[in-house]
Image 1 (cartoon, rainbow, N blue to C red):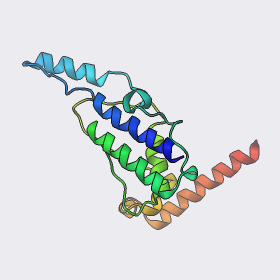
Image 2 (tube, rainbow, N blue to C red; image 1 turned 90 degrees about the vertical axis):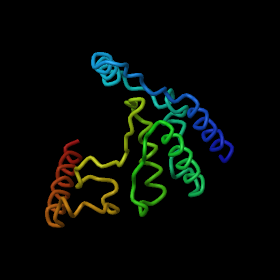
Image 3 (cartoon, rainbow, N blue to C red; image 1 turned 180 degrees about the vertical axis):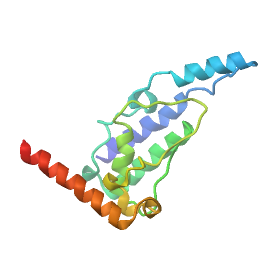
Image 4 (cartoon, helix red, strand yellow; image 1 turned 45 degrees about the vertical axis):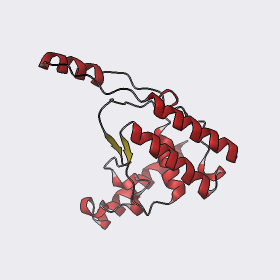
Length: 166
């Protein structure tokens, strides 16, 4: 498995050589507006094409050691920085969860605007179903403990009702 991990890391390093160039916004408002329209309406790109690695090529966390997950996370974050993408997660998120969250980025096509920075913080703003709720530092700024528990119970009841009808 370690050789496979090393190959993934090599593919990610190679992707850094293919970072789309910064856009040329021209010398007039019209040129700027035209360039922005092209950037904003560009199609999303498959992770494999953009980063050299696909979701399916990234092993599940349960198949990796903690050290292997850290190696891949570091390589992905390093590659992302070249594309001006930052991963922002609390330091107390377990490695396996952090790896699976970062891996999930590769599952969908990626909208990338060359020249613009983005941050992946895995926060949708909907705390009751959040995968990193237990590690979130701002959940209690948004939800009271009672509100959160009430909503989580409601969601669990709805899931049980759906599963019971099948």
